[in-house]
Image (cartoon, rainbow over all chains, first blue to last red; front, top):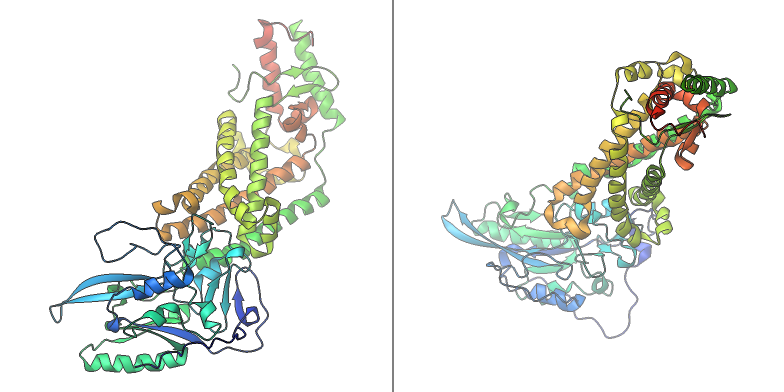
Length: 316
Length: 234
């Protein structure tokens, strides 16, 4: 068993990280932080998950969201998808393993992966609406959010959701407010089987290695850790029994990365676009300075008068 | 036979100088609604396009309102431009002379218009601006609808939205470029702006830049208005 985080003391403590620890801030630059915090991570061991949804409940409670009471959609998922009020969601898939001829129930807790290279932050046009701390937490700052939905386009995991109430984007915060005072995320606290554990990223990798080893000894030859390098690694990681086929787990992307379309939009288009417009305006200015205005001359007016005169004479 | 780029409102008023009616009140109002929309769209769009231009969102009362109002202004622009399109498309059809005009564009830039063919109501450059605007506005409204998450997010996939937003940004850059050409030409060619403010230009302006159009108007008034016969009194 991974040693659970102790309950917090009742004495007031200063937050462990703050704005001074930002390594990225959307649509703006931040000075490099003085100190590098220890990277944290949440490890979700899919093989230990029993699908009880305690994590979802804890998430709703801690974040004080009020999801609408839904309707039964014929599946275990409830609600059927992530919403602005449901930052994490158990996704259930049933898979016939062709090798063993056995039905496997693959349950994955979906939510923000807290990428080291976050696509949401790259796409965000509002200064300071998305921030990344040096401990790896990617957080949305709602007072700066303009509700454009660019983060949705930037995210390789289809996580952020825009609220129809306040028109800002919501997702898992990795319980940044709890982590700031030395606690773990609410979902990890509530998980009855330790399928969710929380600690430093190194600790989690070490713990995952043991879990993978255990799974392999039980016949899951392809068990492994999901920490996709395409997004620089993530601060929410999975232990998967079939790490070679992450798609089995309700479409977990095999090699997630920021879409090249988003890279082009936020890269070359942004810079080349403004350059082109600047050049166009400059060329206009230059042309005016060199060639001068194109003025109508007296002779032009006289020609016009002759033309119309001739016409009125003809008419009389 | 009047050429199909002539409109009934385009009348010649002899005098010193000669005055030629170019745009009706309706066309001018239509134009300025479009112009205002395009400028507001450019400002609010650029605010969301590049972080260093985000400050422009303050003109619209902050980022949230910029995000909200931008697509609505786009809808206004679309219908407003549709009005302009219906008014002007005929006069902007491409003609043989336009190719020659374009081939001698250096002379135009050098203010030597005598070397280019006589121009009807619109020259090749104006026609290119017109058609670029038309095509780009269709691209912008359709890609814009896909990216309009507040109302239409459920109808497209995220990948389609990614394509849409990239296309939208590129088209926006191009249309602002076309607008720069349009705006600069109106300043560079003196005497042009009164066409869109008071609706009229001088005969000299028409002779210099749109001689064929002027000749056609003169021909029409010498033949056509014979029946109504009310013109000379002016």
